[in-house]
Structures are given as C-alpha cells and as structure tokens.
Length: 398
Ligand SMILES: *Cc1c(COP(=O)(O)O)cnc(C)c1O
Image 1 (cartoon, protein in one colour):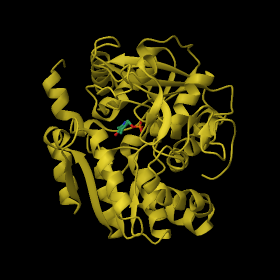
Image 2 (cartoon, helix red, strand yellow):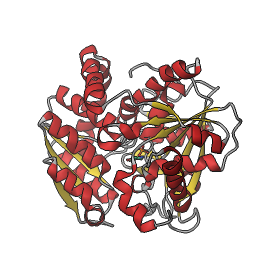
Image 3 (cartoon, protein in one colour):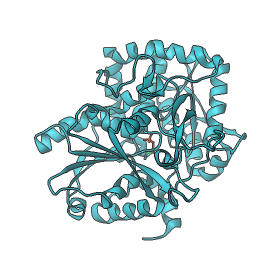
Image 4 (cartoon, helix red, strand yellow):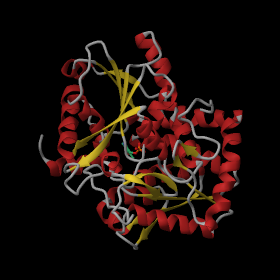
C-alpha cells in the first residue's frame, strides 16, 4: 500500500507529469494541507495498515477471487481472468477507498464525514462505513440525480446518512461537489471530506490510488498461484474518474511487460453530443481541484457528460490517467451504451455473472481488440449488476 514505485506515482509537488496539483479556493487550503501533511505517515503506520487489512478481510470480504472465465475465454480467444470486485461488500470496489478514508479521518480526530455523489454509489459506500464507525454522514447530491437514483438515496437513508440536495447549476454531480466543498470550508476542524475516485486536489488522487491498489496487490499472488508468474499480459478496466483502473494497474505501472487498457463510455457515440469519452473529446483544464483532461466548451465551461452507466457519467478523468494518456503508458478506448449492454448480457449468459454496466464497458472492448490465444488478460470486474436491473430492463435487448 505504501511502496513508492515510479514515474507514475505522484511527485512531491502533487503532479503526475503535467497533471494534478491542487487548484482550490484559498479558504479550503488548511483542510487539504492538513491531509497532505499527514496522509503518508498515517498510511505507513503499522497499526493503521493492520486495521485497514483486517476490515478488508472481515468486512469487505477480501481477497476477491481472480476467476478464470473459461467460456468467455473461448469466445474471445485469450485467457480471460475476472478480478471479482463485484463480490465486495456493497457490490463494487468503492468500499476499499471509503474504508481507508474513514480510518484516516479517525486518525485525524474527525467526527463527521461529508461526501458528494452522482449516481449514489459512492454515497452508499460512504454511508456504509459511517454506519460501521458510528460517524455522522452528510452526502451532497444534485437534485436531478436524487430523482433519477431513488434506490441509492433510500439506501443511504436506511444506513443513517443525511442526503442534501444541491439545487444549483445542472443539479448534478458538479453542483453536489461545489456544495460539499462549501460545507468543508465552513467546518474545517471536525469534518473529513471523502472523495470517491482518483480525482480532486492532491493528495486525494494518490491516497485513493493507494487504497485501491489492494486490487493489483492481490492479483500478483493470485496470478502466481494460477499462472506461475505474478503478472498478466494485459489488464483491462473501465474508466470513470479512474479509481478501479488505478487500483488494478498500480503494481504494474513500471512493468513494461503488462499492457494497460482503459475503457471510457462513449454513450450514444463519441460525436453524438451524448458521451463521456473524456480522452477522445477533452482538453486540459481544471476540474474538481486538479489539472486534468475534461470535456469543456471553447470558453471552458464543463460539458454535461452522458452514459447509460451512472458510474462512468463523469466529465473528466483523474490526473494520473491524464498522465497515463499523455505518456502513452496506457491505451484508451471507448465503447457505446449498446456495446456495453450487449457485453453485459454476454457475460450473464456465458458465466452466470451479471456485471455492473460500468464493468460491462471493460468487457465490451474484448470483442473489439485482437488477442493471442495464450495471452493472459485480467478484466477488473469493478461491480455487480444488481443496481442496474432497472436500466437493463428498460433497455430490454435480452
Ligand atoms: C463508480 C464505479 C465505477 C467508476 O469509477 P472509477 O473511479 O473510474 O473506478 C466503475 N465501476 C463501478 C461498479 C462503479 O460503481
């Protein structure tokens, strides 16, 4: 979790190449600075790590299996393993990060937690760990998202969180983020802000990547057991903000034998005006407190993204991924709503696993790329499809 590897690790100034940093209002500086000064010491502490790994094991259910999907492998013509993050408590990888951050918040003496959420998945993961730790939880959510994501809103309430509606702007994720930041500025002493992906001002992207790096940490010994070598040829992950991809890639950044592939959501098509394919459409700019690639108008206004999958419906990517893109270390692809939905049904029928629609984007690219028969490919199956049932039913193509 704490080992320094590489060019792809954050530099002391908070940058990954040209991207990252901390572009925040002056009023927020003390909060972020407190984190920056303390996070590495806390993460390296033996008793912190003991608590983190114990909860990952007993509460989250880690290690998650690395499953050789034989029927899918036969279809694709490669050796396809699925890293089963979908089997984690709450149904996705997001819980790895919220467990880490709430333990960190406790170390910093914080008693209250705030978060922002778009589709509600991060809100649920945050409300879950707040219940676990007995901490007060406030989740900001755009009022439009509240009406679109009712089951997750109710989940958060059942778990004891307060869901506050953001009524400004488009009433979606960006507006919820603004409200959460405002809240944090006004409550700097007792409150920690849990960000849900490898986005935000330094040190968030690095901190979240480290918590998620448990995914590739497990992959190493699991591949050693099944393949007698601790690396795959290729890793595939879907890309919203980039936390599941960061976790799946983390221990292989410097291993040139391993191809890294990310898959963004192109919605109704890259040029349709309904897309979230940031690297295809975006330009450098400031989003969520860091310099990164984002979809924006000529005068720099953030473009509202679109994807059938709520978790990929984000107008930017984390700065680490902007760097992986610029440096060419990872290759960036995108698939449409329809391609992802087809892949969702394919996995369901071939393996008896209904994936999250986010994860189905990663699966869909398997149909479009060339692999060799012996190639060992790990697809990070970031989440399960239970939450997407209504979307799948409305799509109807099964
Ligand atoms: C939130 C989410 C994502 C996208 O977020 P990343 O930070 O890019 O990983 C992907 N898959 C699932 C299941 C999610 O819930």
